[in-house]
Image (cartoon, rainbow, N blue to C red):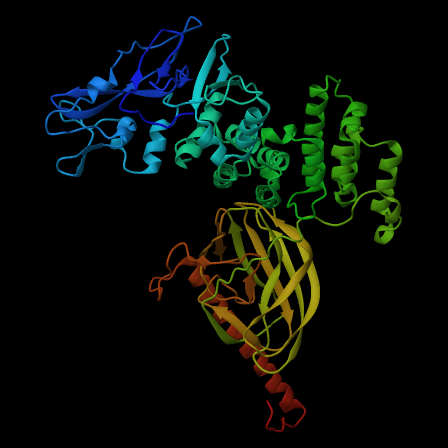
Length: 617
């Protein structure tokens, strides 16, 4: 190849439509048939050196390439200087500028009207210049072809150098072509490559990233999956990461299963983990999504194996049955119990039937005939056996789901007081949440003195229907501190949204600390998920003096930051109905204590003696 630039005695000619050659007086010539390159015309106007850029463009018209006509320019004539000896620098054929021999200074390349020559001068940074080259045929040496729905081809220009710098796949592709001469033309000609498994819009988004590092204008909900596939195909990690980050911001329980399947397909462990966490927390809503029935069998089994799903087994069974019906439709099978069982395969045994309520199993599972008669008999035997005998013969897990979700706590009291006595009646308070939760237990205040042992019965009652839904009787030992002590139910208790419940704790033991200035409303903030709003109310009936302002119970299960929905007033000057009831119960409590004291006093008088005072009360 000759040196770039023109010798003073060179002449450039456009000889024909099919060929363009550069002839040198030395007899050296080389092919310039590449229609996509620029060539330059050197002229002399008004005794001033100038370089004008002409684009040798190539367009596709009815299958024929056409070239812009160019004027033959005698470079020797262009370099005839005036008496002052001005000449063009031989290297300025590519726009490097002209040298003023008389004044020994470099002058900018300008045309006769004084304007700057070349598009390069309009851009100050490499990024700006590459942005100009994006989807531009200027100097393009590769064209990607995309077939439209009507069969026509659409050409997308690109530059091998830029693609190779940004993608190892492109580098290997172009290096292989040059090494084996397997390209559509030689290295100094453009190459055409038809892509059949990539969408044009996604490929242009890929080019935009390679040329400009920009993803904000190309990635959206409609294009992100296609762009991620294209980025994976051509091994562009930066674009892959941008797509994954975008998907993480869009992740909800409605699309969690769809994104989980995609994340596993593309081997994106971070995204898959986040999808599973969302499914664990909101399994009931996630299973309702239309995309659930479209996940693959392996992903279905992965979800069914999880102990962290917060969902009932019956709900899980109904969702799996929906999946089986859709799988039969896809495989063109009649959705009979036998075919549903066939498409489910090992997934069926991942449902924990023994943990279902026996009546739910008999009413909703047995009629579907997805289980054999022998399997149903074994499950019914398990229900009626003592302590789950013969459980070892069952192929189902007996581990309850949802036990390993992060524990969180709610403390509604702003102050701890003492002393709180016990009369055999429970401390009770009504509560309601706006999000389904699992209640693990209560935090109860203990002794206000030394170590003391307490017996307690805790309960949760559905106030709306008056039904006891959970109870537990146990003991705990207090160390005399003002902190609370965990008293747990045997199993997590499901609490539905917007349903009023009563939390009850009946303690027997020494006087204890108690909470005061209780908040009526609390907002529990959960990073990355919706907040949980708690509402506490006075529980009518026998409640040992408990109100929404004073109580022994510090409701459990939530943690993180919490704050009142409405800032409580420091002093309630106007008594509410709840406050009046609380005052009345206080008076009754004081009256009862006074009566008990009088009876004790009378009893001492009857036996003719008193209690000897001691240093210990």
